[in-house]
Image (cartoon, rainbow, N blue to C red; front, side, top):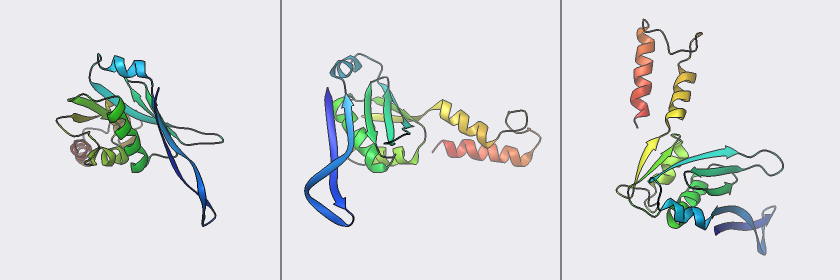
Length: 167
């Protein structure tokens, strides 16, 4: 199993405890899946789910390839850790398509110059399911459909949403 662990310094209040660190995040991928990915379509979909209970955190998942990371929250730092390790250990091919949910944090992590997620090595796309869900929640009517075509303001809002979603 491929594994990268990140630790941080431990503090007792405002004082750093010498020679002591605590778990911060972990990335892991199974070698059989890494090898199999070389023979799959070259795309990955990044998503996350919040973990509830005693420890909390976020489980970030790459669909198509079984690679996982557990982080405290979806921050640029944690996503950079995840995406860098994913690129280093799993998705080394050029021309890969990465699909995600338009998260600003993911966008920022992908834009990092050292991320390895820039053309021609990788191309970005947005998840249609997330775009549809966001569209329907923003423009829902009593019938559950997009606003009436008779409303000029509604048409302008829809066009504005569609235009901005291209960014």
